[in-house]
Image 1 (cartoon, rainbow, N blue to C red):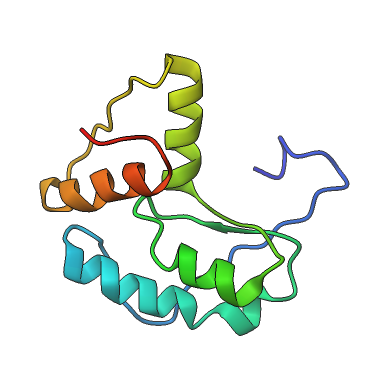
Image 2 (tube, rainbow, N blue to C red; image 1 turned 90 degrees about the horizontal axis):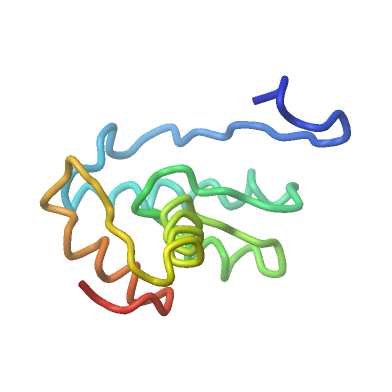
Length: 115
């Protein structure tokens, strides 16, 4: 990523110390959300935060805690881009069928309808 980024851009990976190692079902998503929210004190120093798990664990809570710092999830961002590029008709290809409802809920929460 550094090679593709403009020289003025700085970024840092911040990883949870505990939590679900793989998010494949709603309980793991909730555990991951709690672990991500615990990072708020470390993330407050940044101008923006990206939650880098498709289910966007903890994104809403972080956004409230870190406001006015933008907190963007890769799930919400990819859905918004897909909706924009596809005239609001897109699919989410996933290997986690137990998260289907969570993915649909995220689309609805972002104003993208339901499947």
